Length: 343
Image 1 (cartoon, rainbow, N blue to C red):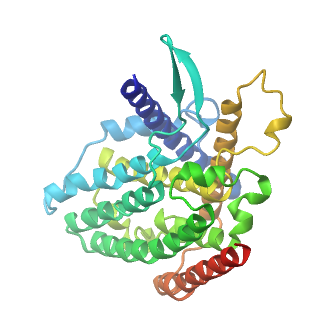
Image 2: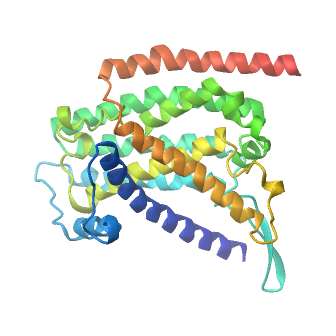
């Protein structure tokens, strides 16, 4: 029974994640139109609602061209390598508290999480870092100088910003005393205990590093169309190109969910004890609160993309190595000093 429930949860969560990717692509275009004072997609369906479906059909039926000069094996596997880690990382993110129901004559506990690992933070860091290989392999396998430069940029960028991101997470782990994401959420049970208040510097470091990790403006140097045509995915079309885009938007969703989990209490809902829970189950409210927090940061990712200009590459490296890395180390020292003083 436990195995069946896990399989059902995997199918449901992956399906919802892919559906959310479609919704975010529509939001990206509508919000960008709003920011730039234009319409955005408004032809397919009411208010352009079915535009992501039209885009998906277009990518499926579009001719899948493989240029003759590429390394075919690397060229073909690169989109999958880029997409898989983005989907796998979400497995340890808790999107609600557990609930117990009576099913098939027995009491079954359902966790609103695919895998409650006691090393959830290490799993996230390990799997998320694999996403860079998709860009490197895609750039190298394309046998194109612009794609290769995009792949090299992505490797340097992700290595540079994974370090301060890891340092910011270490400070959160020091406060909660656990690598389990559920324990980190429970440690933020009160509104004033949210880590955004206890770790403001760590939150800023993590937020900036998340933009760099997802290759979003102002850190989209690996694709930089004005400089590199399209970077690591210049030679890709059809569903291979779409796979890269699914990976990018899945990273945005996962990064937003992690920010909500690590710094904004996850599914914790302020004032929940004052609500009438006889009408709506507590777990549903928690799930909706988690979705609201995640949705806000998805909007923030889109907002920043269409507001700020791109960094120069030397500015990108200087920010990561000369500013964020020392600040991450300083944040750990300050956190340790505060913990030692309180204890």
